[in-house]
Image (cartoon, rainbow, N blue to C red; front, side):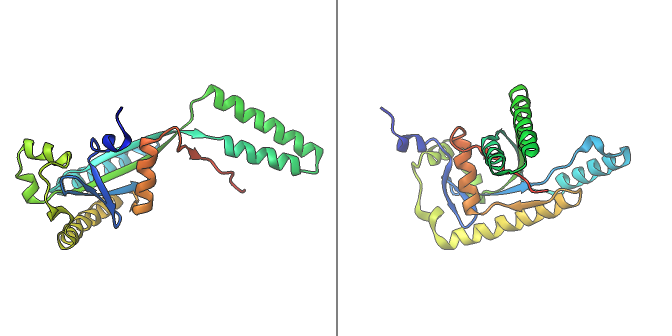
Length: 213
């Protein structure tokens, strides 16, 4: 019977170090979490300006980017539980009734509507020239840990590759800012949390906390 350890060999990720994803072939990745805006609500001139800035941003890059949209169904149970607790603590009968009606409204609305949360990411890569020159067969073997050398894990080489990667990430952050997109890199803990959520979607649902007015 296959074990969890054997399943890991099919993943391209080797480690997460110092806010950087290290792939099994020795290349690196930084993940930027990005803000969003409603393009349809902007005026025609604003839309043209955004498109123009986006074109300039892409044309100025000399490396590829990956844009990822992560959709996740919202888990509102913690929010409903907090409302129920507040209802029990409320002394006013009128407010208890209103909270009860609000809870029922939320339950009915969620049952009829599939509410999703979307998070936007940009993956910034750095692949050393030596790896880019490898053939398809060598890259495939590297993904499964075959034919790898200790070079990819050497601290000095890692620091040099990380420095070049963060230079690229800085360029992307500045370019996105020009057309109104704010972005921040995920740290090690956030990257681990992200991957855990991706590979364990039923165990790691987004928690909606009540907001204070």
